[in-house]
Amino acid sequence: MQIILNGPLISSNYYMKDTDILSLTTDDRHRLWQKLYESIETYISNVSEGPVTPELNPEKLRDILSKITFEQATDPVETIDFITKGLSQYQTHTPHPRYFGLFNPAPTTMGIAADAIVAAFNPQLAAWSHSPLAIEIEHHLVRLLAGRFGFNPAEVDGTFTSGGAEANHTAVLTALSNTFPDYGRYGLQSISQKPSLYVSKESHHSFLKAAKNSGLGTDALREIPVNERYETDTILLSQIIQEDKDNGYKPFMIVANAGTTNAGIIDPINEIAQIAERENIWFHVDAAWGGAAALIPELRDLLKGIHRADSLTFDAHKWLSVPMGAGIYITRHKEILTQTFGMATNYMPKEAAGLDVIDPFNHSIQWSRRFIGLKVFLSLMAAGWDGYAKALRHQKKMGDFLRDALIKNGWEVVNNTPLPIVCFVDNEHEDGRSEIFLSLVSRTIVKSGDAWISTTMLNGNKPVLRACITNYKTTEQDVSFLVQKINSVRKNYFR
Ligand SMILES: *Cc1c(COP(=O)(O)O)cnc(C)c1O
Image (tube, rainbow, N blue to C red; front, side, top):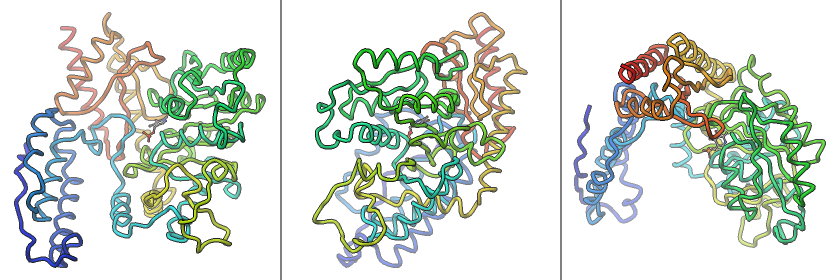
């Protein structure tokens, strides 16, 4: 279905009182909510019938937008029509059941509702006294989620973040502040040795960004090679730390991956924890996507040892499927966030002074902040732990189904993980492992609009096709359809 974008219809708001212009009149609000409800419901109900991918044509979009100059006011209902039709046509539909993509989910309906409520009530989560319920809800969530990971809920602290990158950045800053108590005041130049942090070749590049933007410099980031299963090589990790210490470095943080972005690989968490404990180095686990395994009782063991982490990143906007952005940083060092981010101001509210509470602005990178946790809270309330486990388990089952179907059809699965992410190459033809062939497969499928998959490089040198079950609505039919599609591209290529 091709949607044509008209320019928005002009309305005049001359009849409105000045005080109604931004809030709209009661009548206009009624029309607006009705339109909003219908537009969202239409999208949710119909997204699976359209293409997954959009036309990529910047000139066309700039041409459409050039007609919108705000010289005249537009009817509010028309603005909703414009943007919902526009987005329906011009985005990669991550809520589509045949989006086998990066970890972007179909959002939970409770999460959509929560974000609307947050926008309307606009709670300010900088100071406790301004949003006591919202802030306590987030604390409650941090404690309960930490409990799922095996932490003692009474002994943890944490903060909601925009996503995993901010949570990982928070981890780097807290690790620095923990190891070098003068860092906050005198900066990195006060540290005589060169601080270094340890990730694997398969870790997310948000650590590289954090190193680049925290004053550490990217040289401080030590990428440990992975073994043939794409896990951090722990023997090399120990060796490299030792060599670095001999060469004037001061190792201050080790990261274990609990579900790599490329291939869903879970590092040997306990072994890495042991190295970190022996060396007295801050231990962080990046469980942005894979951490959701903690909510599936029979998979929880995959994360064994995760409670030994000094800090943990978990992204609710990935496998928990809440709308972006919702990351979580959890730590078992109750004072470290305040030590890292705390400061005194004259202008912030003081009503909560004397209460046993923490002002989030003293506790996180962000200052004014929206109520990120509500979409997690309402989604969990409406589904319950069991409901969530069922939805996640369904996705795991679809991952298993995809893996089996690929193997049956002569594809070789090269990543070994029980999580629903499959990296594969063609096993039947000489060129079936080549980057040229594999990227042709993904490009052909993406271009057709029938599905979205991608290619990546494992360990920086092994090209693979990558398909991940990111949507709780994906069915066996969707998976079979994908396998048929890639089979037929292969057949054409090797004809
Ligand atoms: C997605 C991801 C991140 C980054 O999270 P954002 O929410 O995109 O900021 C970090 N680590 C891992 C393992 C991820 O998969």
